[in-house]
Image 1 (tube, rainbow, N blue to C red):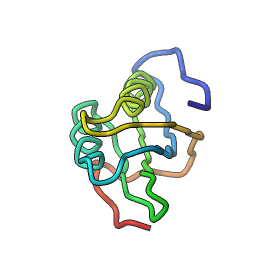
Image 2: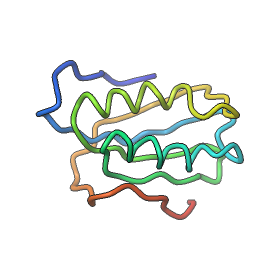
Image 3: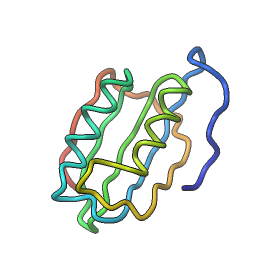
Length: 103
């Protein structure tokens, strides 16, 4: 995992663009991501990429984003995650969490 995890609480918000690699397609990774992100109160999206990876954008309180990044490294039971890379993202993010078309 690359990047720096924030250490302060729920009042600070951040957004990160994430790339998850490994056996993450065909194992319900996107559906799991939607359910998990919504449960954490995050905004953003998730999508498959042609190279076999999954890309996501998570936006919300520091603590919730950090927890989502931690959980992405595990993924759903059928997944086998090799890496989770992220960069800070500063563009506006639409409310809610959804699946975007593959790229």
